[in-house]
Amino acid sequence: MQFLSEDLDTYIVNHSENEPELLQQLTRETYQKILQPRMLSGHYQGRILSMISKLINPKCILEVGTYTGYSALCLAEGLHKEGMLHTIDINEELQDFQRQYFDKSAYGKQIHQYVGDAIEIIPLINEDFDIVFIDADKENYANYFELIIDKLVPGGIILSDNVLWSGKVLDTKFKKEDTSTPALIEYNKLLKQDSRVETVILPIRDGLTISRKK
Image (cartoon, rainbow, N blue to C red):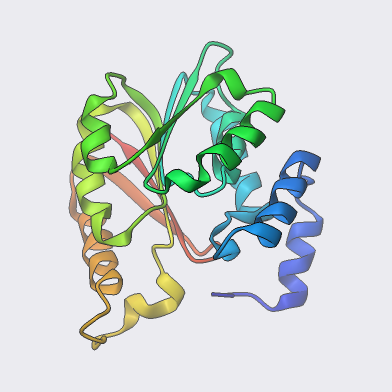
């Protein structure tokens, strides 16, 4: 969903930090070889993820939803020199593609991949997280939140992607088969009402929420 004119959007991108060459290569190959390439975080949102990570300098990051690894690489840019990024995706067919780019980067040894159901995997990761990025199946956003909130350090950040869902969160009626929209509506309410976090929604791309644990 575009909230700004195309010209203004282009201006913003052109006056923000450049996209690293490796991520440009990753974008090109994703569009050439992988289904649903629009799932990529992309240049502008990627630079936002990178900036947030650099400001925090996290020792431990959790990502729920790896896709082809673009957002993981952006978040890894801010990792503490001894930090680790744990990233989970249900699609095992993408694992080798992700690893190829992780190992081309400076952070390959700091990125640990998991394949499978994040609801089952998250409890097995015995770490406290400084940053969590949620960008997976929308129906489980609230479940992911409940699984990670107690593993998030005080002052830690949860980043939730696609929370405006192309504006569908304003719909009062949705198709019966549409399970994502009502799930996101309830998730946004949860973040607003849960006293353990303070939350702001940024109208970036398809909506990005920043929630800070109190």
